[in-house]
Each structure stands twice: as structure tokens, then as C-alpha cells.
Image (tube, rainbow, N blue to C red; front, side, top):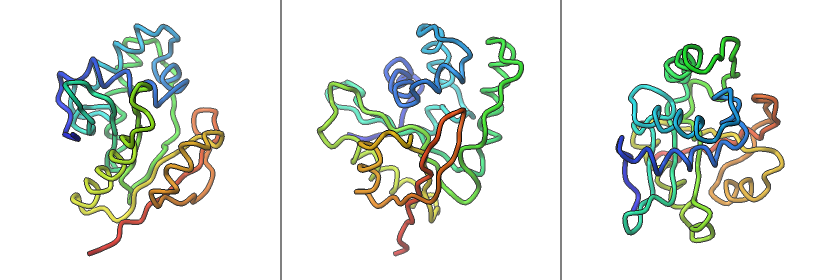
Length: 188
């Protein structure tokens, strides 16, 4: 079942967000310490008004277990949503010169992270989360969804292409090269 996330999902959802981010989680948190990274993302997941908040997350839950997450938001609000996160990093993680390029923009609903637990992969959960995210964006009145996928991640690229996402261009982000993919929501 896919549902809106709740603050108390943090302990189960944060590891999935970190999994989706990969090395970017280290860069954002200015540490390689897995416990500190988890604590940071669990904290922000449980808070309001930031890009990793439960407010911006759908979870796939089965038998009381969170097996997947989709974190998404209005791309035009990225700077506002990122501010609380970067201010906290400055104060608590010694990230005085932290700068992350804007990975999204106004005019697109942005899929920030999509993640499925390794034990549940291959069961269609990612596809269901994408479909739920498309419906979410449509309900909010968006006409376009954007996401970034690492150029080397062919498995994810194929998944997004089968769901109707198309490569718009390549984009550098935090030292990596990504496909910027777009999905156009059909009007009804």
C-alpha cells in the first residue's frame, strides 16, 4: 500500500533516502560516518518545511514494513526547502562552504529520491511509486515531472524510460553527471 509518510516513519524511510542518494548523502552531510548521516536524514525527515520532510514523501508499506519511498516536491520551492537543511549543516556539520547546484527548477514537480529496499526489489514497487508520484503531481496541478538519474545507472534509466520519462539533457550535479529526465503529464 502506498500512503503519505508520517514523522514516525523516519527510522525506516531515512535509510531508503540515503540509499537512493548514494555518495551524495556523504557530500550533503559533510561526513562519511554512517550513523551521523542516518541521524541527519532521520531528523530532517521528521521535520516540516525541508526537501527531505515526511511532508514530501510517499511510502510503500507492506505488513508493517516500509519497503520503498518517493521523495518529491515543487521544483520552484527548492531554495526555500533546502534553506533549513543547509542552515542546519552550517551550524552542526561544519559545512561552512557547502553549495549544491539547483537540481530542479520552477515548472516541474521534482522526484528527488526513489528507493526500494534491496530485499523487495524486482517486485514492481518502484513502478508503483512512480505511478503514485505522477498521480500526486497531477493532483497538485503540475504538467511536468523532472528527475535526475546518474548517467551510469542504466537500470534506473530504463525503468524511467518505460514509465514515459525522456532525457531532456545532461546535467552536472555535486561532481557527477546525470540525465535530466522529464515526464509530461497528459491533460484529461
